[in-house]
Length: 141
Length: 141
DNA sequence: AACGCAAATGCAAATCAGTTGCATTTGCGT
DNA sequence: ACGCAAATGCAACTGATTTGCATTTGCGTT
Image (cartoon, rainbow over all chains, first blue to last red; front, side, top):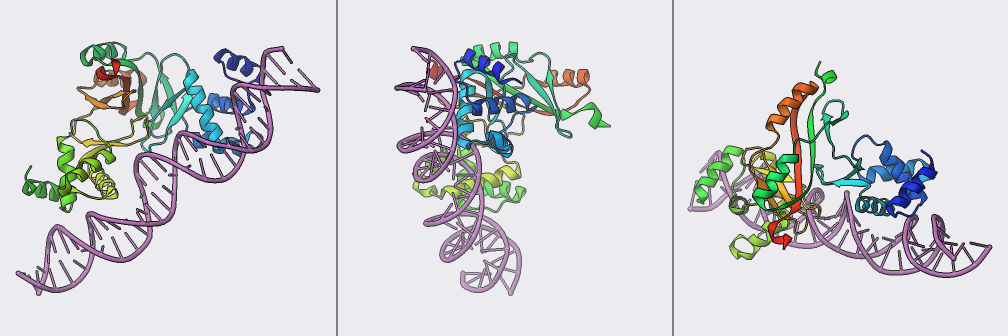
């Protein structure tokens, strides 16, 4: 968890080191699911030491997203954007609708499909977001 | 197109018949891609005869969505919601990151995959959300 | 064919997520 | 330790969507 490590990580990405950025980074690292800017703000603000302004949270999330450290998505039904760490390897998750547990899925079912889709539509396909919802073995009982 | 037909359709869904609702319904029926409330409002307001208030458009879209007549989604990166007729079939969309246009994709690449995934993980798969981002032919130039 | 009332609409004001301008503070290279 | 560009805090703003309330409209009833 050391702040020394983070300084190095940030430098690699050309991101200036600040306490606020470390707090957001650490919070995102610990988060097991995509979260909203508001959630991050609320949580951090509760732990006094990491209090910061909401607009700063937005600015940091935008920065991290631009630098490729974080993934932003708009899939939420309520229209709020969510953010999560970019684990670099393209990944999808299986979400249990009962217990909300999230499990990463091995492999991506869309690799070939994307190629074909790009050819048939003449779009330059850049990326995709996929989440699969279901009920996990434990909750099925 | 007939308003007589629509009256019947509405009644089937328990929707009271009004000129505004007919106008929105007809406009959505003719639209080939998901559109925003604003777009519907602008278009209808231009054709004098169908002029109506923006909040009415929102209310009608909410109603249609609740009744299952229309699908709402928040895929747009710019935060606007889009609406389209519910053709009852499971659908995904291709979103242009430059112009934000949205095009429905024929077929779902995940049908078989879901079945296999369910077997291998022992999850009961319920549904999935997928958005594919790219650059459309027009914007590629 | 007019009547009455609940539901729908118009309008303006409110709300909510996210953004921006600007004064102040902080990190980092020298 | 110094100085300046970049980051933050704060408050005001934006743009999409929602809401309260007065007015209007659709539709079953007489």
